[in-house]
Length: 130
Image 1 (cartoon, rainbow, N blue to C red):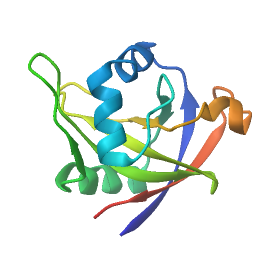
Image 2: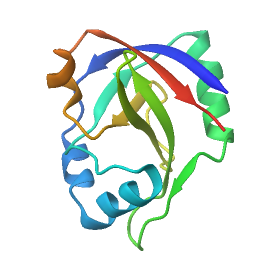
Image 3: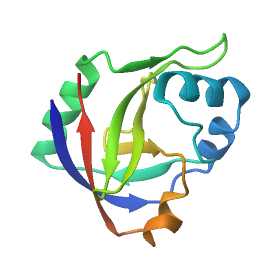
Image 4: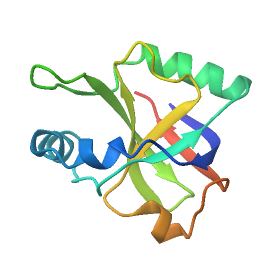
């Protein structure tokens, strides 16, 4: 199933670059998704009924699991295509207080630079849900 969404680019806390730079994380993404993520995540803010429905489906779907070593949270991923040209993955961390409007994307390239994006820009994505 493909779900099409649109979100607004926003700044994150800067923790994505630290997380994607950890050896086991890079290895897990390479093994599970076929690429090593560029340091950091692309943060999107999503809202509206389409997002509420999509988020519910994503939370219930198995996704592509990322199993952490002790002390780290688990996550699941979904393949995405951004603006019809960049492949990556949406990451849903298994964290109870994770913001409901936040959607984090990892990709093998610096998406902001590749697409010339700034905070507030709209980003279209197709999410593959198995």
